[in-house]
Amino acid sequence: MSEKITFAVIGAGHIGKRHATMVQRHPEGELVAMVDTDPARRAEVESFGVPFYGSIEEYFASGPKADVLCVCTPNGFHAHHAMLALENGCHVVCEKPMALSKADCERIIYKSLQTSKLVFCVMQNRYSPPSLWLKEMIMEKRLGQIFMVQINCYWNRDDRYYKPGNWKGNQALDGGTLFTQFSHFIDIMYWLFGDIRNISGRFMDFNHQQLTDFEDSGLIQFEFMNGGAGTLNYSTAVWDSNLESSMTIIGEKGSIKVGGQYMNEVEYCHVQDYVMPQLPPSSPANDYGHYKGSAANHHFIFENVIDTLKGKTFATTNALEGLKVVEIIERIYELKK
Image 1 (spheres, one colour):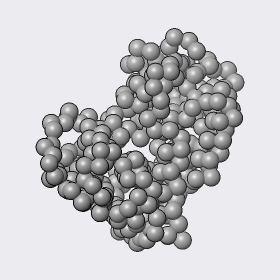
Image 2 (image 1 turned 180 degrees about the vertical axis):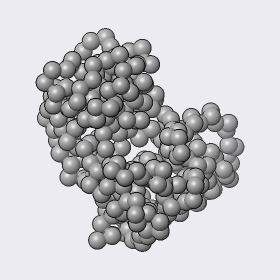
Image 3 (image 1 turned 90 degrees about the horizontal axis):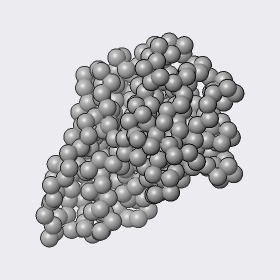
Image 4 (image 1 turned 45 degrees about the vertical axis):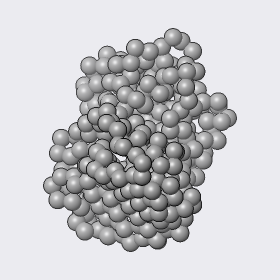
């Protein structure tokens, strides 16, 4: 492998441009191509100074070889584009979700093993200081036995976000609110507490009937296989702007609440024989104009990808963890049927 790790990006929207920017900012990364089926994107990515291709097939037929393909296309295309990348000898950095079904995730993992190529799943919320601190608290069993975990995700996604003709809100390409908006928080839950069982839930569509093919809100209950009970309450029906993304943990030896709009602030920490340290500041949220997303931690992703491919470390979010998040969401959504 050359001294610099080379990247191509498929999907030149907001997230694709962010991936391209992160690659070009890294001293050991090199961007070699941008790919998008929308010809209007060509002018938008001219500033990156790399060739533009109108399809992934065109890129693989005539484009410069890349060590890594970043998949930043609509959710419903992630599996197809990841498979093509692996078949063409590329490692994959896949935006969340890894796919829209466990079966497709399994196909990707099988192909990655066949081709000896790595699949990195973008779950950048793991890098936020409160998340890293929570992981340390759980690993060190500071809270003792976990009794209850409550996750609240209350965001605004209205007609400023769901534009007619866009992939967002389309069942086949979007997958649903848990896949597109809140998979990061399900990932954090799984990362901290493991898998869940005995899932029950209710789903509502308060004000998105004309905007999306799926629910805008849900109330989900479950048990953790490692012990303790959990709830996930979520909605994109919040008026005008995001309200919060929070996690409250009730344990045998203390209680913690991490909140803020993006689970970026420790709001409460009362734990036996423990003094809360000063955490580094969290990154700001991704800003999309009228609405905001999760913390802008993508630079950590690319540091991890490059260091892993150079043999210095290992993948922070591997394909199996990407699969588990999809599987948990799939099991929750099976309750709607």
